[in-house]
Length: 99
Image (cartoon, rainbow, N blue to C red; front, side, top):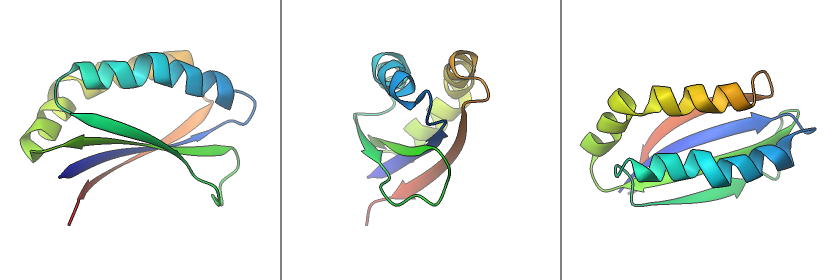
């Protein structure tokens, strides 16, 4: 199983609004690409960062589906996210394989 992980450190003043928007829009847009079968949202409890840290993990069975997402879908989805919450978050992406 391949896991595409997005870690967001979100400004504390907007994190509840951010989370609602991400659930309604961002995640739905990523799942709608067909490149991922499922997702989970996690809140980091012991983050050393200022703000609130969330991880969203998207699961797929094939790394080529992740590559397709990155090539054709990631930029428009992240542009939309940036437009909604400009300068209110930091994003780190990682790709992992379940062993």
